[in-house]
Length: 109
Image: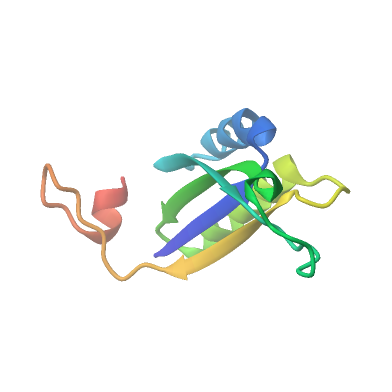
């Protein structure tokens, strides 16, 4: 299982979520966030340097869904300007559904 974490521009959120759902990818957590991209570090950094973004977190059961989720996010956020975002992929060892006690892939359904 893999967790895909994507930090994207907030104005692309609806398009990304709709495209993920059309590809049968659900279980999406969204958080508002702010951060710094690649900036000139010799410059003074303050709160005004922080860009508003959204963070998506999605856990998928296999590499097929991992690739599909990544491709879907890129297709719906790709712009030529800097600041389109980043995608990170993490291994997930275990998943539990609290209400039923289901584990791993069963907990993702």
